[in-house]
Length: 272
Ligand code: SF4
Ligand code: SF4
Ligand code: SF4
Image (cartoon, rainbow, N blue to C red; front, side, top):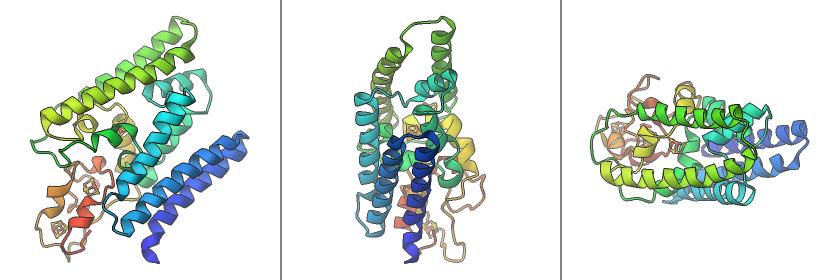
């Protein structure tokens, strides 16, 4: 029963958010939206416990496709970072601002970068590429993320300062074009650096929020040193090059753990 605490806990968090937002915002959409996401992630972790090989990918597709196709393409909500700035500047707490608050700003205090492992529609595609574990050493180009972050902020600021009309329509097209660029750049980088997650490591602007918040994450993989035999298997299978045998919060690439559990699955001593 103990092994079900994690999925049930995650489901409980999402159901609490769903009911709270439904009642406080007087909008039943939030009940549907966050229940669906919570159940999808619960299902993914449940399949993982049942040792289904593609458990995480199931959750990723269920949440990622829902957000990309239904919320993005059909409902016209821009959930990318420019959509967050847009809703923030208009001063309303809905759509992308709620999404960012839950998944990318305050949520990571509880579940770290679970978003990156189980829900992101960009990584949902990148994870299908052949380089699940990086085949080349990490590059020192993480500063690019600050540029993409600044570009998104400047882009939306200019739209507001110049009093451009019909910004909502522009946001819709920014979502389509922005996603296309993310996919193209992400796929090219994955092949150039032989690393599916190169886009996450160097380009993604959302990591500006995700990394500092997940540093304090309640949920994190820990190593039982009394069982560990320093075989190094955990590090060899980690897509984010986390030094998971170091339990300190300052461990190497610690703010990049996407909670994929590949290290846990591959540890011969059940030390993680
Ligand atoms: S780092 Fe960015 S692109 Fe990668 S999974 Fe996280 S949010 Fe998605
Ligand atoms: S795979 Fe397990 S035993 Fe091997 S180094 Fe990692 S934690 Fe230790
Ligand atoms: S392999 Fe382990 S340390 Fe690496 S990202 Fe996945 S869960 Fe985190």
